[in-house]
Image 1 (tube, one colour):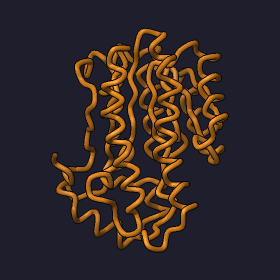
Image 2: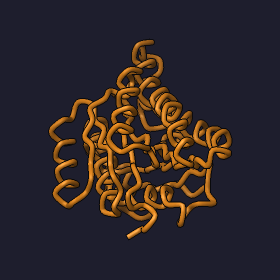
Image 3: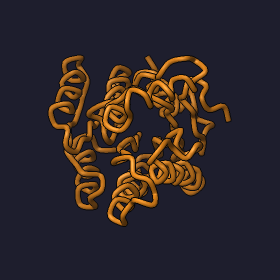
Image 4: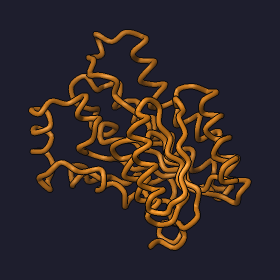
Length: 254
């Protein structure tokens, strides 16, 4: 048990499946109060919330499209109304939205990718930071990607660029918010077996990526959880801000 996570209020976007789901359950296991945000995956999100509640945890299930300004405001308001504060924000929601080569991409697709992966991180961080500051500080953990370093696979150039924004934004925001006792860091997953790859990567592509991992296997969502718990807990990472933790089985060694 990580003692300083007990009773912390943790807001996680995109928490219905994959890494977000595993992280939500991980925080709850350490006594945190968890907000499970989802957009379209109501059944899966409900199952995550039920697992937490059945284990004796406190959970708020809240639907919100993170690309919508009013929905984000509602998410923050609902969290504060339920729990009174926000101690940890995990900006996990994001997606490639399809493999589209740059020369074939229209403006609408580009804007959707950027809105989901970049604007949502900016907008929710902007909304949550004053709440955290008013409560004495907190931790913002953004989810970037190995694609931010290698440009992404075929048809994922713009997604990789969007995640590059998340990495850079995390460092700049860390400098801006340090005076408010808010730490900002990021987790960068490598090749993780989640619904993300079920949608966007073929079995052949997954095997090709697996062969590039020194540990010899594709990661699981649970492999990422420890990095989030570490970055959220002041007792473990209180002197860290503006950092990116790579969870890639050794595929990236900065």
